[in-house]
Length: 124
Picture 1 (cartoon, rainbow, N blue to C red):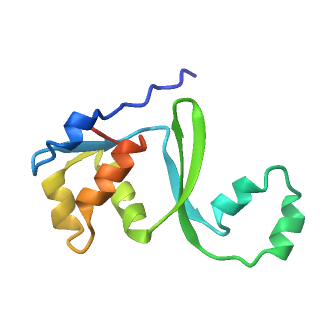
Picture 2: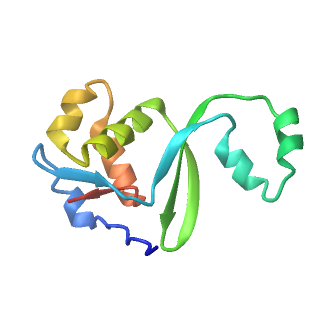
Picture 3: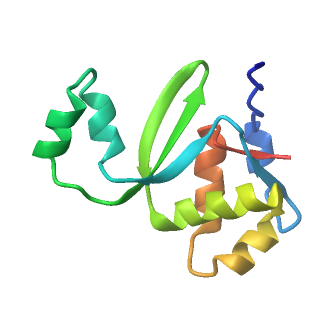
């Protein structure tokens, strides 16, 4: 299996976002709902999962695992970010106007700006 290269958004592309700007999500980004805080789980390093599961309270959180420059990062994300990621992945690519229409209460500009900078999303 050949690992696909992540698409990168240049800073000048973020400065020109308008309704017709098209966004995609990199294949390397994995997002899901987790029963534990994935940031805490990753920070602990090697652990006994059975012991960890019995000692830590379960909580449902959304999270994303992604890479930047060969390193892997994990973050807990808000439900609205999770929904945006799901929407983009299900459609393949979406315009900024589509995102604003679908997620009227979310700060879509902030979400796409942040996650393009982190390499999860990209401008097509």
